[in-house]
Image (cartoon, rainbow, N blue to C red; front, side):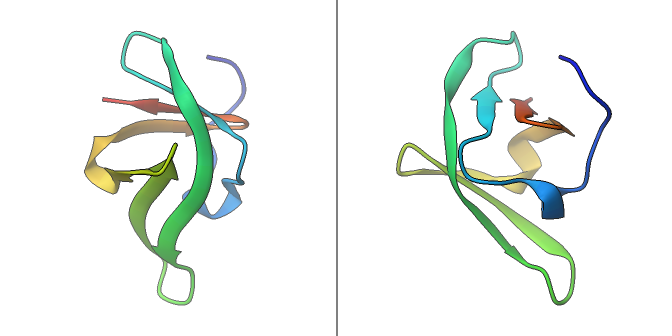
Length: 66
């Protein structure tokens, strides 16, 4: 995984999502959260909801799950 860690607020649709072993599982369709109070709920990836507690790292262009 390259790049520096970034805030969930910078995640955009199209970013790659990989499992804990680095295998691609899809791309971000939508970020679920409330920017006003800085609460990250999770992601929609391929129409499937991935809860925030499954997100291990967020780096520019890529999200790695636990």
